[in-house]
Amino acid sequence: MGSQYLSTSKGAEQTGREVIRLLTMFLLCFIMIHVGYEFELNRNRIRSYAVDHGVADTAAGFPWIFVALYLVFVMNPPAEKGSFEAWTNSLLASRFAAPTSAGVLFSMLAAAGLSATRYFRRTRILAIFDDLGTVLLMVSLKMLIVGLRWQLGLIVIIMVVQLWLVWKYLHKLRIPVTWQYVLLYSAGITAVSEIIYKGQQAVE
View 1 (cartoon, rainbow, N blue to C red):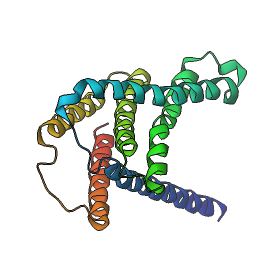
View 2 (cartoon, rainbow, N blue to C red):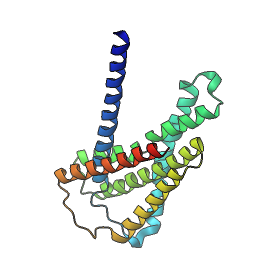
View 3 (cartoon, helix red, strand yellow):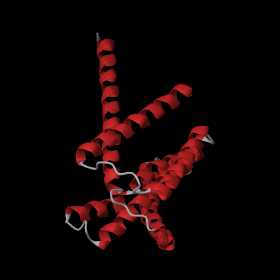
């Protein structure tokens, strides 16, 4: 009886984790679609975008480094501070703190009714570059931890193709952007991502 209850409890816990993970991915998709909503790519100011990218990397890099140092030197036992595993795990976990800087400012400006200002548009660019740099660096960190995997290389290729599509066809396709449709797009992205994830697990 006790073992059956324990098994049921573990099953419910696992189901709860899956629901929370999928819901988090769905909400993240919803937020990120709105971050890129009405993003304009001016091909005549590429040099300015390079400066913006540098600012975004700095804004994302400092929280990442400081949180990683905190995890290594405060949260880890003293004996593990010099281990490779402690550093790689801390660097990977702390990377999730990186894209919050511009994202929080972006949300605060929108909540304050400043979405029509120049500062809001610049913050939108910083938030997008924040997230792009975060994904690229997380792929690199993942390669450092698990080694070279074809799946990680495929992710990089897909990202390059997506960036090329944005550069070539931005605002060429007109689709509805009401919140109901954004919810639908978010669900579709979540479903496709989950199918790829499960397929990768099946291959491994």
